[in-house]
Length: 396
Ligand SMILES: *Cc1c(COP(=O)(O)O)cnc(C)c1O
Image: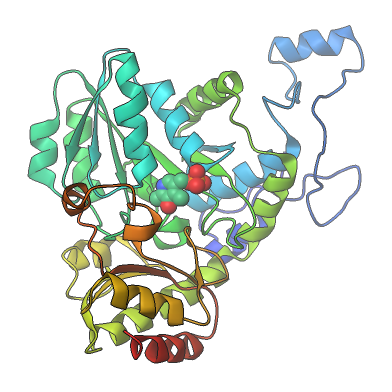
């Protein structure tokens, strides 16, 4: 197996070295893209050795691939988890985890501020298995306590949540949930293991849309889950049946992206905080939501748990739908587009990008207003981003 990097190594050392050095045939520095759908056995005895678990190796491309494995080991090291497993997308990580861990007619609790497709999976698909979902406000511990029932098996939250960047007290959440035998899944896409490691605070499984910061270059879709050997084996078995695997090339791009995770997050954190602070003082900006700001409702717990607050800044303009569209259209550096966490800055209005098909009442229920903007800072020089925002705000 590849070289195990010390658990006390820094995040950048782990991002570069963990999972690598497992290429005895080529001695190449980079982990090759193992572009194969299947694997060959030397003889029948090897097949049997493999089947009886006496030989660790790959059998078929839906169950394992050396390029994936390097990425999985790197992520497990970064999250300080025993094992990780890759998926075709972040959604596939969440849906496979739910399928694997929820019993028929079960019950799960999720927070209201969350990726809308995750919510949709609960309301449109889990109901077919008789699974009931209770939605609680983000960061609301009393509501969590009230929502737990005897048949509850899972609690799921993002950290920070999308788009309001709420940060829940995970040590307290895990105490409450574990006392009731409820597993805690944290979607840590917005935090990354550089800024927060929920497993260290007792969470059972951390999932990621690796499409975002882990990949980091807006060039791949992938998902991942990290946790105990036992839990991850359950998810690995499930994805082997459900089939939502990622490709060897994507795993390679993910490996390459993760090598610079520490460096990129440092820049994302610095730019996010600087831009959020600057926006907060601007006359055309009504409110800024960023956990690094004292004005954020979860600032205290975020400061306690997190090493940085990331590159996503959500804000509301002192304007209406048309004025906000003028501002977004006037931005020269950020692309208008969904997603986040890449080298390129992206900007979007949740109302037009994700909630345009909803009624005003539904949007209000999710807190999506006409002048809400979500900016994902890339790794551009922050002064250039600030200058661009300043000229665009003049067009509101
Ligand atoms: C993007 C995102 C997802 C979905 O991930 P995909 O890779 O697009 O499937 C899930 N959760 C969060 C928080 C996200 O930002």
